[in-house]
Length: 151
Ligand SMILES: *[C@@H]1O[C@H](CO)[C@@H](O)[C@H](O)[C@H]1NC(C)=O
Image (cartoon, rainbow, N blue to C red; front, top):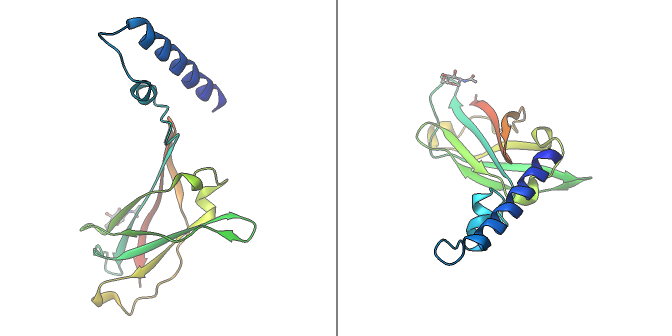
């Protein structure tokens, strides 16, 4: 991880230097160079959490609202982040960056269906854990909670 960080930082320095050397015709702004180096000043990393909401008969539940909550420290919790399920019952959340550094994000966060379409009103709205890391590369992490079935 640290090596990668160092590598990126060096790449950035190199590209800034290159940009200055190239001169007027091919001048990139500092912002562009930072983006090319994958070293966004606004976002250093992305964390995407995805899952699908299914009925007990495995039908996708679209148009539902789910809430994601994360423990951010001793007895502290993040605000509830809301997401909506699409036609496949799936939701994707780009977690806000202040949550990216939470250790064991998979264990710290949980998902709860907040509102579901009418046919599923009587299903239990249990809190769901079981978030797993799917992949991690170049500051981009994907987590999934798989299928969340409402009974
Ligand atoms: C989730 O549900 C879909 C539809 O029933 C199924 O095709 C898929 O294999 C399930 N995925 C997992 C990880 O259980």
